[in-house]
Image (cartoon, rainbow, N blue to C red; front, side):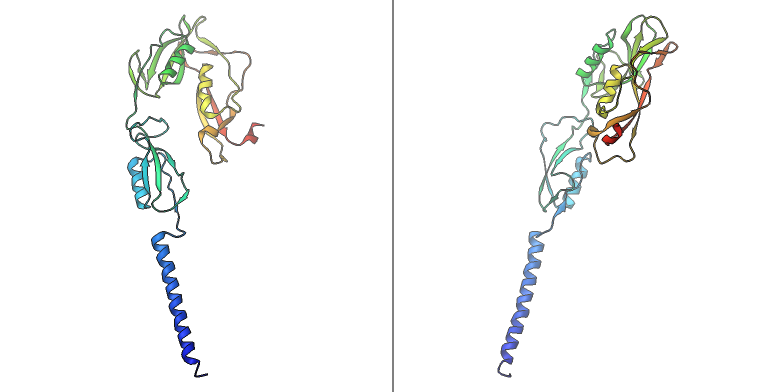
Length: 266
């Protein structure tokens, strides 16, 4: 037995050295090659460029701005903020991965207000859309000219043709009622199933205003493109309704309830 003792000691020491060597090698690989270490890509949308830069730097992630020379303006995001990213938020990547960013324009572009006055409402609406302006509220006003634009305002200030406005601004329109005075006829469209992004345009085409937008409390994760109307405050009408007022009045408003649950359409 004593003859095997040196051999046993040798193998024991060899085993210990082998174990230490394998442990040290595994530790080195994990530390220096990020073996099995993945990073969650942060959500950068609508964050300023500086905020995005700081977050990515803390995570040892790189970035590349893909529209650095020509930045279009997106009204759904703040100026000079991130409008898109690839990889997407919460994707898992390795340290040093390049994140491709699209950045919004530094300033809101300016557009020129077109000559919509004394023009029929539908034609005026198309002129506004052609220069990226929107309709905020519609007002009825006594005038012999029916469905014709009498006046327009932006944030309570009257606008004249050729005035400069920020692109995608929303303006108020004053429409003549024609004869007889103090009343206007309108129809309420059926909004059930209409996408949220399209509802204001549809109401404006019917000389109506959008009221409050109420979101389903059980709303699933979604974006506005997927939300649709399942309830409206005033029932759809087949026959024209009469709206009576004195001298001037805001057009009727329709409140809506939105969801992305198709079962609520039944």
